[in-house]
Image (cartoon, rainbow over all chains, first blue to last red):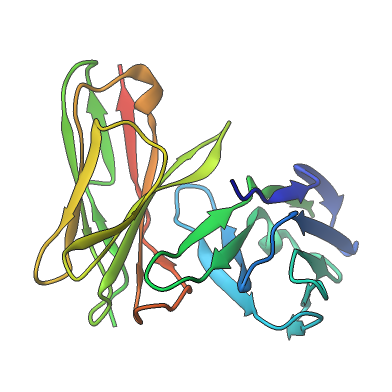
Length: 113
Length: 113
């Protein structure tokens, strides 16, 4: 069974602070995705990383895929209240038609004004 | 382009009843996956359909079933509802056969009393 561990589980910070959340696994994934989910809504895809060591930036968000494609991190610079939400990582495995996304339990981020 | 549409948004059922949830994927998307989200377990994969065929199934009891129609719309059914089935049920659609980027609907909040 492939598991994705996300840490921390909860994070409450003040506006303007920086933060990093982590997504770790003992399994290798063909790609890894990050989603953000707001209350009462479905997750929204932020980014997909595919290559080991890959770094992608989305405005104040920086995503990194580990060299071995087993882990990833999300760094937010100068967090804003609008960044509040549940951040989920999901690992994808390929293998013909038998693929699925395995989700971590998420990091619940609260950014206080 | 319309997003993934799930109906109904909210549902209250009694133990022992059955329920059917509906998902209309993004136009042109042929893959539909279903997930159960609870605070304790996070997002858990139920099953995935592609071109009316179930390609993959998670570790849920047989009370959980689904199907996909020729227009790619999908339904999931839960029979003999239990209190523990209370959750947010999310549907996600994808475009390509092996594309792992999922686009989620807003979900159906099921409460079993």
